[in-house]
Image (cartoon, rainbow, N blue to C red; front, side, top):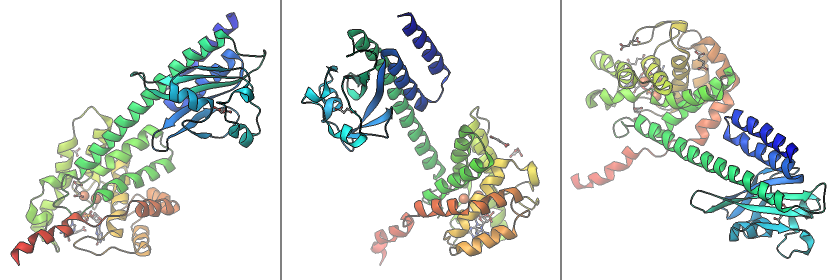
Length: 377
Ligand code: C2E
Ligand code: SIN
Ligand code: SIN
Ligand code: SIN
Ligand code: SIN
Ligand code: SIN
Ligand code: FE
Ligand code: FE
């Protein structure tokens, strides 16, 4: 018992240090394995769309996927009951298929349900083959139940976090597109600019959190266009001098909307809005900032935004070919664009293309609207 306590303490220290939820489940599987002397442990999670159980963690094997009503795991999932199996091959509930595929010989199984806080079964924690005895004990089942409780909480937290993150992204993308009825830019343009910046940030070696920040901040670059009057924003052709002076203010308007928050994301977004039309050689706007006076966030967004604007159709210009766009960016290395970022761009052009292809622009909604105007004819 003393050694078990030791194991528990070691692992709880590990778990407490671990901030990444994805890494906690493997630690819990190891903990269970050591604690009850099982040869293998696996944690199955239910996938509603496929109606299958799949192993988010499994010792000794690749990911396993089983129908949600097959085998011992399926039985536990369906009934919400714990199961102790002494000899798997004598138990009609056991599915020999998995052993057949893995070449493993299952003998004993302990399996307990993972339940969410409403008592709904969300998965199964399973231990296979007792190592130093013929069978698992009552105490083993007790211990496994405790580890499973921890695993349930971990899975639920991860799930809530993912939902929150998705809602967060959705709000940012939608509000960044607040001018959707007026500006020809698409929602996907906004998303793509963030993803290109993430490619650059990853290449520079930023940590995950900072990549995530620029990915979500860059899409807000044009948010200040909500302050631009329709006669300018909607103008089909070239802007005159007076109109251009107004258009340039979208940078400062965006900065004013986003500045002053405690959130690093919004601080970065404010800078991006302010600086995304500055140029490396100091000829940009609104302030003509030069070189590294322009934040790295502004410099990344400038390159990403122009790459996407050039390869897209605008009312005032056709879409440029990829060759022409790349040539333009090369020619503007050290002029419009940060030369180091241009080099990184050129090395990773295939990632940019992949993003552009994957998130194509749909038919612009504004072009569909005229059908409602049949009335006039
Ligand atoms: P946008 O359409 O998203 O373009 C973003 C940036 O991509 C432009 O910033 C510019 O740096 C680059 N870009 C886009 N099209 C071209 C092009 O045909 N040639 C070159 N060399 N670069 C191009 P910029 O110029 O500061 O413009 C900012 C925003 O002002 C544009 O965003 C667009 O909304 C508006 N805008 C710019 N020029 C015109 C225009 O002639 N007519 C109208 N109606 N709007 C314009
Ligand atoms: C089952 O749940 O019946 C399959 C057990 C295994 O993973 O080998
Ligand atoms: C980072 O946010 O990770 C780095 C920012 C910078 O290089 O200025
Ligand atoms: C758009 O309408 O697509 C761009 C406007 C913005 O980003 O605020
Ligand atoms: C314009 O004058 O309409 C655009 C100028 C520029 O792209 O810098
Ligand atoms: C502003 O006041 O509009 C911008 C100030 C700055 O350059 O940070
Ligand atoms: Fe802009
Ligand atoms: Fe843009």
